[in-house]
Length: 340
Image (tube, rainbow, N blue to C red):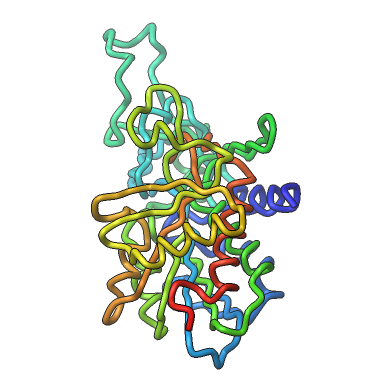
């Protein structure tokens, strides 16, 4: 199963779909979800898959965001360099010598000064306001292929690491998308109408989840995203979160405590490894938007542990993706937190 999951994740992470330009990612995800239920889209580029019993008394929404972080072109200089700004929380420390790619496949490298030519401050990251991209062609030729407003993203490709670990750009949140594709395969109950929402623009404004959730009368929702795993120099609660030790169940004042408690109970009952993520308020995920949709939705957040978020080399464990799918499917199959 891990090899099948890896194939899906690699396909998703190799696909364009910067925030606001998610159409390629939508098409990629749709081919995996189409066999499980009715597919719909909306004017904001959201993808919906309608599963389960359409006449069920309860409706649950499962959300993961389709978009990935990237850049928008703000200028093309007369000497053939492209100026960019951030779409989402780009870590500017990783941009030196990074290769970026446009939706049309054109690749360029982020400009940087060799250390020999700097003023001794080469240890500082170049701010995005001074970031340019070199596509290796004169302005006249470049303007025939790129326009102001076009988007770019990291050109890095997915790679396998030791064990079941993988590295790729866009694992935030394409691994969450893969978890919901796998969950669709595992859900087997008539108690719920299940709506899978693969939402747009989470990294920039949350438009997809805000409007996508509003379209339906929802009783419960689970947002699937990524969160922080232990790595060198991380202390505190995230220093205890390990790859391969299961999904992170959020406990927050914004989320529904009965749902969080039921997810924890289901994990224990079904021997699904899990980890806890206490958050004092806002979760920073689409769960925050969904919880206040219409007159309110009982919402939980389940996150896949990840290292090196918002870089071209994000790292996860495939086991955590599988166990996220299992946890969500078992929660639904047993009737959820409000059964009976």
